[in-house]
Each structure stands twice: as structure tokens, then as C-alpha cells.
Length: 127
Image 1 (cartoon, helix red, strand yellow):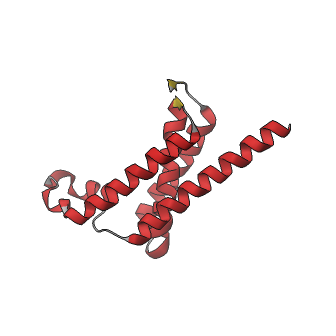
Image 2 (spheres, helix red, strand yellow):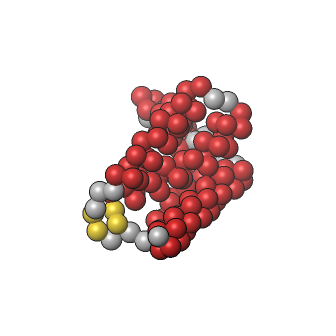
């Protein structure tokens, strides 16, 4: 792994960040609770790939483990310990309750990312 800025991934990260902010501010239901989680892992993946030159699978596994860890930590009801000044922000970022559907959304987000990466690599090799 080495530090190497990648504009393509950074642009993807910025687009996804704006999308996530819009979803958090204006959306409800499926879009906010499931599609937002689906996009979240792609956002984190893109951010890491925009800074580091690293194997796609390694980044995907790291991001998925991070998302799963945060989701399982919600079982501990840590939100009651969030500092009052940051409570709303931490609830937004870290969530408030465990959901199997979130785990599925994270998994599908990473699978989608890897499928797209694989397709792009295949297309680059055929050119």
C-alpha cells in the first residue's frame, strides 16, 4: 500500500458524499435506511482508493469489516454514552439500532463495487 492520489475515485467519493448528505437531510424510509447504507460502503471504499494505491479486495474486506463492526456495536447501545454536544452527529454516522437489513445493504454495496471494479479492469485489458 502506498499513498497515491486518484482523481477518479475522489470524484466518485465527492458525488457519493453529496448524495449521502442529501439522503440524510431529505429522504426517509427505504432510501434513507437501506439505500443510504448501500452507498455508505461505496463512499468509504472510494475515499480509501482516492488516497491509497491498494488491492481492491483488501479495501473491500476492510470496508465491509468496518461497517459490520459499527453495526454490531449498535447492539451494545453505546448511544447512551455519546457526548450530548455530538449526539445527533454520532447517531447519524454510527446509527442507533442493529439491523440485519443494514448488513445485507453493506454486503450488496461491496459486491456491487467489486463487480464494477472487475468489469472496469476487464474492459481496460481488452482495449
